[in-house]
Image 1: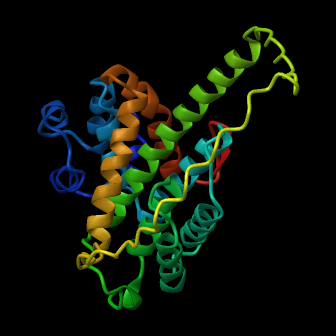
Image 2: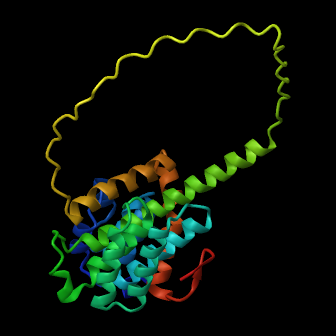
Image 3: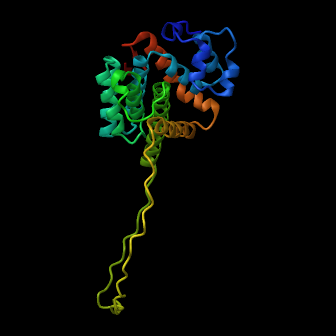
Amino acid sequence: MNSLIPTAITQPLPLLTKAAKLSPAAHAAITPGMDAAAAVDALQQEQLAGDAVNMLAHGMPKDQGVAWAAASCKKAAAAGAPMSPEAASALAAAEKWSAQPTPENSYAALAAAKQTDFQTPASFAALAAGTAGGGDKLAAIPTAVSEDTAGDAIAGAVKLAAAQEQAALQQEALDAAASMAPTADVPAVPEVDSLTAPPAQSVAPASPAIVLTEPDRPALPEAPTLDEQLTLAEQEAQAAAEASAPDAAAMNALLLPYVEMGIAIANLQGASVAGVRL
């Protein structure tokens, strides 16, 4: 049992399990009387690392949770996962808020998140920072944000980072295998004798011009709220993780290093875990 977890997670377990949106299997693994440490251990033993990610994401202090999300982004990038300039800016904004969780840094992180396509873990990390500590500025955001948004975004960042790391490692293995495969000799193309070349074909007369009329455009749908955008993006993150890990055992193995990283950050922030400086 990891006895360090309760020092980082202080929420009552019933409230935490509700906020974490645990699966039925996870609820069955958690028995009455368990504390946070025992619950996380039980989830790991039942190969439910995805639920453990959710519990940590909602239970950790948000500045530590965002630090976990940012470290997950770096872990995936170190393995070769792509990161656009917009995603890099979002990651930097999330890290800045984690180190200095002020309303100004939170609002800047949310602005950086909105510049991304919400397809990267850095997008989620910045969204978590942007909705976790906006203070009075958060009320000025013209979108609906639930109090669970930050925890959901942290979990989405971690899961998508794990999926991207796995995809990058798989691509690296495929590239290595392709570079070692023997190449077949391509026969040279024979030259064409200009004296025996067939006569040029006659060109058919041009068809009359066709004038296209632009059809009526349907009305554009309303822009999704942050919560709606997060729900769609989190579903894509979960699907990406499931594609990288087709069964429960593979999913657990994929996410377990990230769970351990989250526990370490919650208790030993500033340490080095899995080669990533926190």
